[in-house]
Amino acid sequence: MRVVVAPDSFKGSLSALEVCQAIEAGLREALGESAEIVSVPLADGGEGTVQALVDATRGRILPKRVTGPLGEPVDGFYGLLGDGRTAAIEMAAASGLPLVAPERRDPMRATTYGTGELIAAALEHGASELIVGVGGSATNDGGAGMAQALGFRLLDAEGHDLPAGGAALARLDRIEAAPGLRECLGCLRVRVACDVDNPLCGPNGASSVYGPQKGATPEQVRALDAALANLARVVSRDLGVGILDVPGAGAAGGLGGGLLAFLGGELTPGAEIVVDAVGLVDVLEGADLCITGEGQLDEQTVRGKTPMGTLRAAQRHGVPVIALGGAVRRGARTALEAHFDVVLSVSEGPGALDEAVRTGAQDLRATARQLGRLLARFRRGTC
Image (cartoon, rainbow, N blue to C red; front, side, top):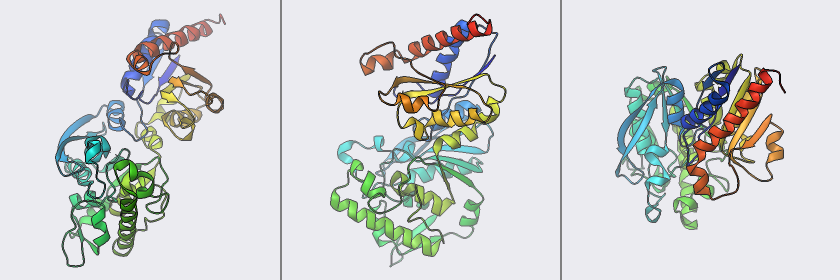
């Protein structure tokens, strides 16, 4: 019997690797060494994506001190995958909302410069492909800071470099690149793990939808929206790339559009990128069963979260899939069971969230052990 374990993290409780380890331990208690169990930790582009990719490919995490959202140094990181040529970056590690205290949040001047520094560090390390997760930003600068860190000049009408932040983009007059910069960056393959479809501007754009949670007042939202529209206009004229109405361009305060404009990025659902990067389809060939899961299985799960990416990969080979959740949201079970062969909550019963987080590994192991006992009985033909 061959079982592939391919879950996301149980956020706030266990990393994807720790989830794999707990499930594998439970299966082993019931099946012994007779079963082949292959663990592939996954993610969907958000927090934990770099760690999951590094764990799955036997890569490594590289620390890098970079510029934080408000210009102060922060300890960021990026991952170099096992192939030695692909780097994984979470923009939140350099430009994320948790890096700024709530009372200091200021999208008018917050910058993605540190994200650009992570990209530059990966390139200096020899990376020729990038996977960039764009969730959890503190910024609304359309990737302007990132571009400046990589060598682009964003200039006002008097030829002065723009200061940091989204508000300054209202004064953007032209974009210049050092000779050969665009050609050099054009050799990269950049996959952007993007799980929202917001355009850059307008009522569903970056500023209107996400600006308030980053501290923007209604007046600032309008100013930032107009500034991003100006960025799109100049990018279209000077770089020949249209980003204004592209679904996903508004992700991470417009960083999605910035990666498209300055690095030729491909905006793709995060789960698809990770599944492809770790070669999950190939791993599933010949498997008898696949086990996936995430902290909470709910309506969002079937809209492209990690368990659905695992399911689609398993369907390529006709492998049945069991989905495990720290919890299964009431009312979502029908939608979940329309996709997965089995849907299970690993919680032992009603209780406080902090208790479920504390016992997550124990509960996963126990659930996997019960699944293993059932599989063993089927294998012996006693069911």
